[in-house]
Amino acid sequence: MRKDYNNCFPKDFLWGGALAANQAEGAYLEDGKQLSSADMVTGGTKDKPRMFAPRIVKGVYYPSHTAIDFYHHHKEDIALFGEMGFKMLRISINWARIFPNGDDLEPNEKGLQFYDEIFAECQKYGIEPMVTLCHYEIPWNLVKKYKGFYSKKTIEFFVRYAKTCFNRYKDKVKYWLTFNEINCATIAEGGYNGLGLLQKKDLLNDELIPLADLTDNAQERFEALHNEFVASALAVSAGHKIKADFLIGCMINRITWYPLTPNPDDILACQTKNRIFNDFAGDVMVRGSYPTYIFSYFEDNNIDYSFITKKDQQILADGKVDMYTFSYYMSNCISTDPEVEHVGGNITGGARNPYLKLSEWGWHIDPQGLRYTLNLITDRYPQVPIMVVENGYGGIDKVEPDGSIHDLYRIEYLKKHIIEMQKAIVQGVPLIGYTSWGPIDIVSVGTGEMYKRYGYIYVKRNDDGTGDFSRKKKDSFYWYKKVIASNGQEL
Image (cartoon, rainbow, N blue to C red):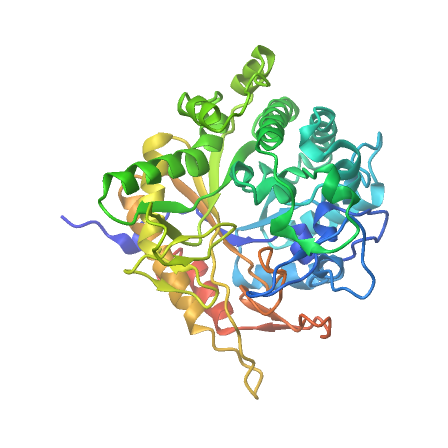
């Protein structure tokens, strides 16, 4: 007998939305906060890259400096999330708001109080907070002084910060993530954002250069990633000692790769890409050890992995995460043919899939790929709770003369992905929550623009720095409210 897909979400399913501090808060130097890595990156567009210089360049637009001013609008915004019926709100704590220089001995009380306010507002509306401790925002001082996570000292600084947050908010926050999309550090594009890794040449360069052109050192990048694994494991162990019922997870940028053709060369290249990009970080954090396949990859790429000590191996084994969370926006294809058409994507692109449509920013739209991915994760990590903590449609929203915003394209995208989650749950996937990306318009991390909007709530803020930050409900606001109220039965 066919199972009922419309009544499959658990009664306590965690519906909600997800934000990042550097893309929402603004107030970049307010109440004791100092610069973070995100504050050094300019705005861009689909066709114009985001730029970096090791100083703030006058007259240049830095979107994180004001973002959507969530710092001063959080009560209004959380009330709107409450009106939608959110069960969960994923936010990040900006490390530089708590430890302004990263290596401070004592935290910034005003920073701690800001997040106290956020959690109090969440509690008012029955919203369970989920906190990412490091979401592409590392104190700039740690980047300059220590090369980010390339220095083992940064492990100590992160664990101090994590313990401070765990102790302060232990009665307000149960769900924690250590690092956002940690697996992005397996590719060159993830070195600065994810690790705070910056080479001396780029630190001494005084001119704006494309973020993608920063110097990459794969050896240092994988060492820094290892230090993040260790920092995460130590934080997990510390968190469980502080409060046993904490649920602490990893967060993976899941770009599911398909071979473009049945050519065995494409199939093997695709297997390698999935292993290194999608599986490696999760294997370390969920299973507590380095997978055997990574060592041949290290050898093939002349990476000396003697940095993996026996002491560190024990730390990883002791600090396994409790749940697996991931972002999913699209899939991509792998081809060994250099002549095939390529498209963009979240952090990295791939070969064009002729069976899928593209978004306005050139990303594949693949709802079925989400179900395929959920099944892959369940097969790999049986019985481990899973959450989709980012999924959304970035598009161009038009405000009509009467003030309405008809974002049917966003509703259709999300609806199709939720249907695939229903099917995955029926097939046995232990999915416990879904926080769509950008429940309110925020700065896009890839392009640094407001023009690419994700939210159910429109923010009057433009890429030229104009706009009064006023909020307005889109059609998708009312749709998602209905989805949550019906626990996914009314789509």
